[in-house]
Image (cartoon, rainbow, N blue to C red; front, top):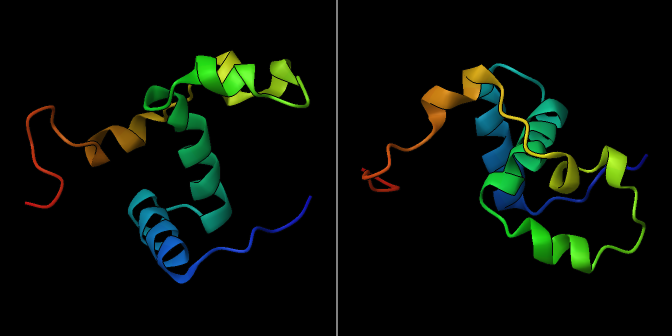
Length: 82
């Protein structure tokens, strides 16, 4: 496994997300990736997949949303930056 090279804005954002979740940055990235099927078109992602490791893929297996992330989600009618 390799470590990602993150841009400054991404590293700062992940760090803040990790603080909010009280987890490590690595775990924060895992949560973000595993929750991403809720907002991304998984069908399109699966169509262009090159390795077909479906059994270990968040886009095929479904999303993972830890209960402690719920309070961090926007309310349906809220603005992104109040």
